[in-house]
Length: 100
Image 1 (cartoon, rainbow, N blue to C red):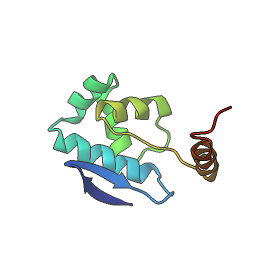
Image 2 (cartoon, rainbow, N blue to C red):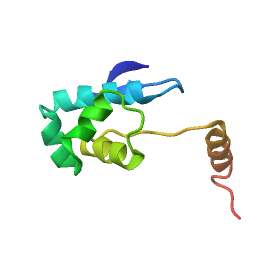
Image 3 (cartoon, rainbow, N blue to C red):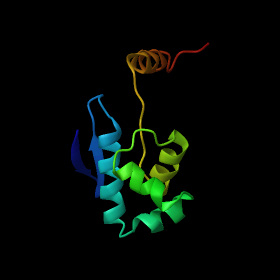
């Protein structure tokens, strides 16, 4: 995983092994760039400041819906992909331009 810059933004590039450490780094980095305290981010996300602290300190038992709210508040997108997604995309592209 590495920090990358693209189009004036910052994004994280992971090669399939994203874990709580990578998410924690991304959240902390984005929060600091935004100039937010943990309490401010918590209010913005609709969660407690303890939830932000827990995520930034890699607490693995944090609930998914809480993580999602924090990521959304920071405008961090997570993209899921799998080999099946690639097969589906390929099939969809082959079907373009053809009539049913």
